[in-house]
Image 1 (spheres, rainbow, N blue to C red):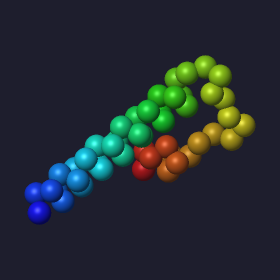
Image 2 (tube, rainbow, N blue to C red):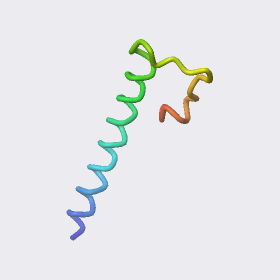
Image 3 (tube, rainbow, N blue to C red):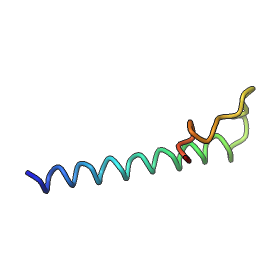
Image 4 (cartoon, one colour):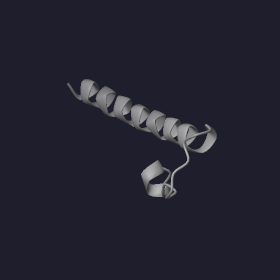
Length: 47
């Protein structure tokens, strides 16, 4: 059971990091994703 919980936590950490990278790529690199207000570092998950 402890191993399953550890695996779940590891998976959640990996998914969180993947989401951060995708947001950074989508909002900073692609055209036509301009926003009136820039996203903060906290929203982007970089802090």
